[in-house]
Image 1: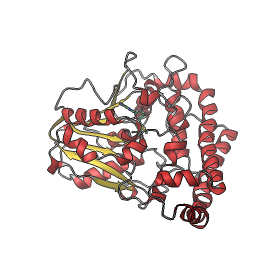
Image 2: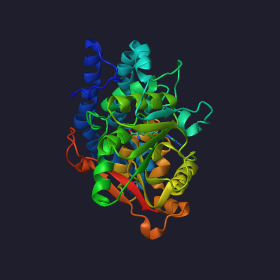
Image 3: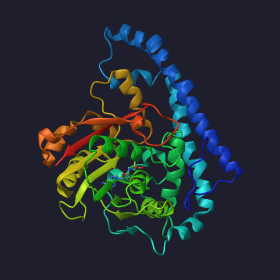
Image 4: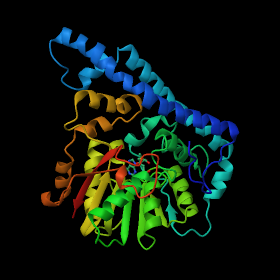
Length: 376
Ligand SMILES: C[S@@+](CC[C@H](N)C(=O)[O-])C[C@H]1O[C@@H](n2cnc3c(N)ncnc32)[C@H](O)[C@@H]1O
């Protein structure tokens, strides 16, 4: 496993932790490359013929497939292993972070930062963010166990690298690379001076943008104080100037018409039906005329075959991605129109790893993210 790019805030592994984390990564690679494909013969050779015999028709949708596949021994085995590997990610990195938490907290306090950090302890955190541990990360994004806690951020940094099996790149910034490459190719002449990244977590994406565009003012918001503290210190350690603040993307304190670009990277699928509309409304409010809204997220279900949908939806039912099921069915163009964007200026797009500007283990179009793209 190629190690994550070193920076001052990255918790350091000892020998055993290194080995455990490599094991979890390799176990996940083995599961997805060698075990997961067995779900196809399980379905076509066993589950589907039984369904056809009983129902005298094909399954209509992913829900019907789920009901029968959940009872199949091979699928149950793979699913249990996959769930177990997800839990192992966090247990393999939490000890590393806890062991050096005091030191990380000290390092996160930066005397003369280039960017900034503004926290709001009175912010109401919406239930969709706290009701379940998203991705099974204990305490998810919001947990704070000690004063000035940075542990949620430190765990997320190391854990998501294993979660993605290195797919986020050694800088944990693949999504930022994708949106950056996509934006530059889509709008080669667009001048930007002020950009907002919503749902930034530890700033993996926005920090990349800031590194590439040192003359642009970058703001990044999230609900979680711990991930923001860590993200701020991480950005400073990587020499990027970003202004982090603890705010709800549904309603921020920024002035109307103050940004050239409002973007997000896999924020939308972790919100709610009403929050999604509010986030598009807020994006519209914040954009200058001619400004661009660019929200990258996970694939929707439109036009996807029921079996593929069912397999993709594993995350919803087994990995606490509760809202993703709704998002898969929603009409995002309609929400953009409701937010105020002109129909002709809404350009649903997609971008994949082929947009990446730097090398990661996945250099081709292994994964394609839809992008909700609108011009105000
Ligand atoms: C999957 S993570 C995003 C990853 C990140 N954008 C990146 O580039 O690495 C989703 C983040 O959205 C944040 N979030 C969810 N709802 C939010 C809201 N209403 N306002 C601000 N942040 C929110 C969560 O706290 C979490 O940190």
